[in-house]
Amino acid sequence: MEILVVNPNRVDGCTRLIHAAARAAAAPGTTVTTLAPGRGPFELTGQSEVLFSAVGVLEVIARTPADAVVMAGFGEPGKEAAQELTAAPVLDITECGPLLARTLGASYTIVTSTAAAVPIVEDRLRALRLDAACAAVLASGQSVPDLVERRERALEAVAGVAALAATEVVVLGCGGMAGMAADVAAATGRVVVDGVSAAVKLAESLGALGLAPARAPRPPVTGWPFGD
Image (tube, rainbow, N blue to C red; front, side):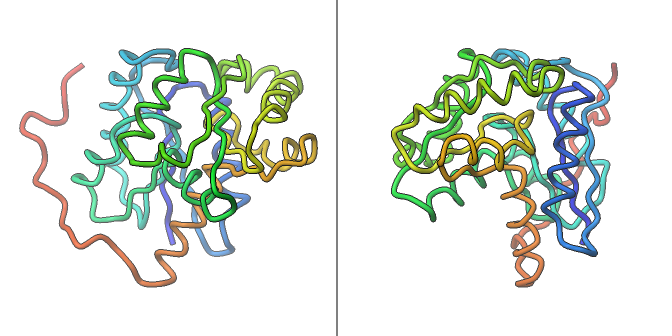
């Protein structure tokens, strides 16, 4: 099975962390390719950057054949558009993390990056109809570069906020937190779900069950590929 994982930001260290987490979760025989857009915002700190990045993410998906696609931006839009570009299942970590968490408890708490990301995540949860079981979306105060470049300090911050959760289940709400789940769980005693790992395992489950979307990709968008 070939899984394409797409990181919507252009922080190389974040792409490497996401790839490592995806590869660690994947079964033997599964190939994981992790890519970031070739253009677009470096870091996604607001709605405008989130939307600008979506074009680059869709270009990567349209150009890269795979058996399944994992969108590794938590709270990022575009899953519905991506589903028009490929016949493969498209799994969004914003959806997969909470879906798995919901099997482990009646409600869950999401720990995301910065305060600016909180309303973005909340909006996306509402769009995906996952908000009812979400007790809270909490900011760790850690940007993506912080999560990548100051890993130990960032882990302490994420664990500190996760420890405040009123729920037993916590979802890591940023791709830059990929690979932190075991350490946060050990530090807090909470059940901690990593969306990247969840999405990879769900993708493999769909493949093992022989399930695929009942749709064909739409014809290429008029005027695509877009000019610089």
